[in-house]
Length: 164
Image (cartoon, rainbow, N blue to C red; front, top):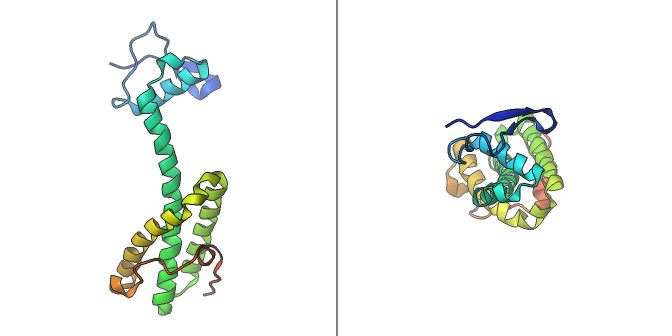
């Protein structure tokens, strides 16, 4: 069953219909409409109408998404650092620019989410495991060429100088 939607320019263009309309689409049937409905309930203070279990899961998911952004930026920086250190003939401007761009991403993610700072060691460890494999694939070197644990400090990752 499709849920009735009403126009409301104040809150992003649409808002779910009130309770006298057909029942809402469930979380797993229409995620987008479910999100719009939950936002409308919060704005209107209709706390009893919230899908609390799924809403709590989605809020937690948003936090994981930010952690994953941190890990992703670290992975790319570390992968290029490994390539730089273990494949010197491939050094070039594109690697330097990639490192620079991902360092800006790291800076932005941490500025927007200072609560992630205590998790930097965990994110670095997870990122390194993946960066090591990617560096091996991209360089053609054996994975065991690279250290099993990340050889770079946080200062190396965010401030080490690279010149092509």
